[in-house]
Length: 108
Image (cartoon, rainbow, N blue to C red; front, side, top):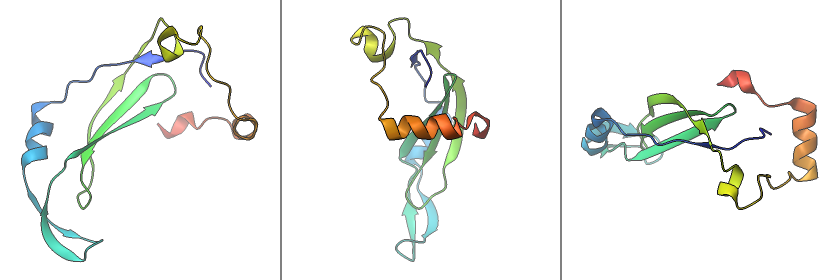
């Protein structure tokens, strides 16, 4: 686990806003029918080192990457300073897994 916390503010570009209000004709595998769908979900993925990736998508539409961003270290620490700069400890079984397998930094 990283010793610091991060913060970031992400502006959603106009092309993403346009994408979210434009219906797309798509075959939906779950309902097995053609429909008009919208990319209404914004998803954030966070990785060690303060890396944040953002995607926009919908239930029957693929997700499009919006961007990759670098967050800044939060000087107050985790929980915005409410925990005296410390993280809540990992559960023993989770800590054992990370100790044994490490964190998959390369996947980002």
